[in-house]
Image 1 (cartoon, rainbow, N blue to C red):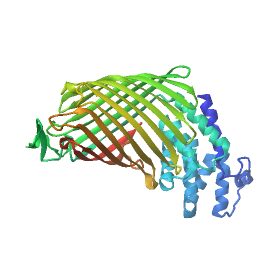
Image 2 (image 1 turned 30 degrees about the vertical axis):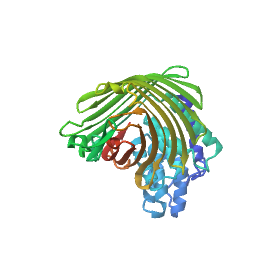
Image 3 (image 1 turned 45 degrees about the vertical axis):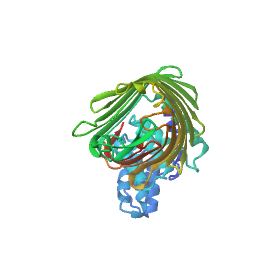
Image 4 (image 1 turned 60 degrees about the vertical axis):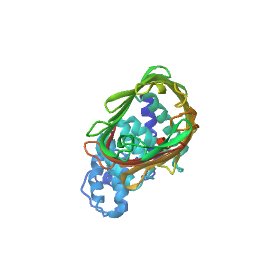
Length: 453
């Protein structure tokens, strides 16, 4: 931890709003007798800055309070108030002030650095690392500060022990059973196509459910450059009739190796389960591995491979190995936003060739912070799936799908209720299949309260 503290002590060198701490304050001229001085607002600000950098906080506080009456110095007063709170151990108050400043202007790099330090002092390492990463994108940062941030982030990663994110809310959904919207389809009677009317149970059903999710990660160093990983995540949506209750969870554990400051690799075993309507419909056992390359302070490349065997209790024709690979590129843009692009390929080797398929696709996204405390994420993707053999009940030709998806999420972490912040998301998915029965559309809204630990 000493390395981390030493690195953090270098950050105040970024301050350019004050003169050197050793400069005398006007108060030093009034030690042995009472004196009066007439100061302009700017001159008083200069005195406050001297006192703050000299760590004479008790003397600075009443002068900061007096400056609060000057509208043109609103930013300076906010920053100095937050800085004094941070330096005197009132981290919760300091965090609120720094976040309020960034709500108004997300491009205030110095404020973002102080927020990162305040979060770190509270043990919120994941949030601190995120703020350091965004701050590092400022074009006007001195080289030594950029180097210090890089060092701090490297130490944070090696020491980060756990993360936990939870949310809950309601989810209106246009297609809770992910079924076709068609009233009738065509089936094959030998070589003869016949129309078939679908009953309501086989068609898309809308509804609103109670939803929630949990995402947690434990990372424990067990040797030099080696850490034990334990990941758990689960998500579920529950309806009044319970017929379409949907619950899925996964737990994985393994090791992460730090091969260099810029390269991390990991390997984990996993087990997952999917319940629908209160019944276990599938279970998977397998493993996943990946590598993360920090190409620069603003660019990252991630690779992952995932292999798992599925046991499908509702139809053993879906049993078999599923193998997929992903490549994701991330880049910090516009200081407070992160853009990403992913390519992926998947082979689903189901026991029934009519269900076995190959899928290739891509996804692009953009997320980050906006003024007034808002944060957002937007993404869209497309993929192509080709099946191995025909499903003769529907067609004499193998199934071919084009799959489209889009998602928008908006939240506001400046608003908090018992530590939870509101978020809203809308997602759209469409499967344009060569077989009418598998043509689906789904529009889902989600209103939730989320907390990030």
